[in-house]
Length: 386
Image (cartoon, rainbow, N blue to C red; front, top):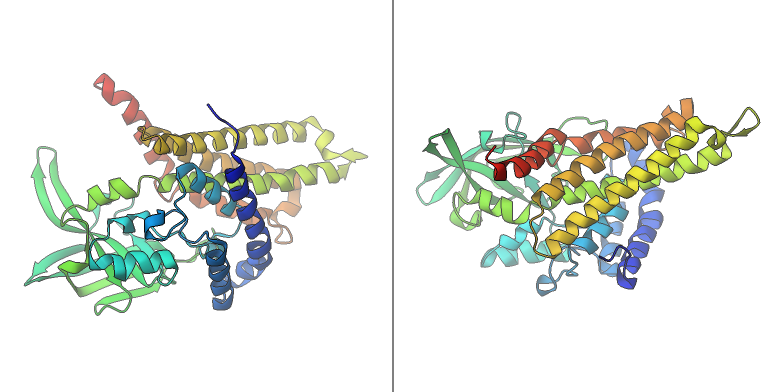
């Protein structure tokens, strides 16, 4: 098994890391203070990403993407994880689910998204349906030859910049031996469609400037042409294209942890107490040792899961393991770094308190830690009949 990076992969890492350091880092304080990404900065990041050839690098070459495999894309996301989520959002990575576009949808949604002409947002979560996707109440019913959508979505990331939305809604109910089971359909909904409103969401302590929004549908009428995939086939589309999003969370957590660790290591070597660097005290040096060990372990877990996808091997359990371990590792690393900094770690003069705040959401979105553990245990126990 090859554990090192190829020359091409090392070039990817070096290129993206340099981009983050030169195009993302300089704007982070502004975004942190204002909670906004100025349009001119967003446009500049997008333009430079396109010029670099990395925009929509997660899409195949036949539709205009860079055609990176899962491991290569995981390396991209790992390096992007070092920077502000609000800013690296414009280092565009459209939702892979758009590969399910068919016919005219390719010209209206898929190709413009890959070219950076239109931005998308994924809308699944509702106030009463988070981990329980089938509990969603947002629904669509037939009316003549159209669908009429009603209900709300919340916690929709990137909705403030999206030109169109990939929306999952309930379109019926099947009676099963285990009780009612909702059928789910995926729709493509353009901003500005009558009956559809995007409004500001909640103020979050994590990832300032990377906003969540609320989507309201009030008798929003859509034709069949807006169905992505098959009617009632939302779960099939979801399972085919969205399974790997958890790797993104894991890899970005690794990247953010490495950046945080770099601060901890430098501070432990420079900060002196009792006449010597604090890194010489076992209470600090052992934390440093534990941090790098956990970061490396999380890195291997995520790249291994991505490798399995590239080999066409089952990877659901491995992806869940990477997601739960990497996000919880990030929490431990950011907390330990803050402890090493002491009181200064809580001050906004340093980015440590931001890393600490930002880390908290990673154990929640794209499937909570509890959901990941459920996936892992289910994969292990089901073959044994348990």
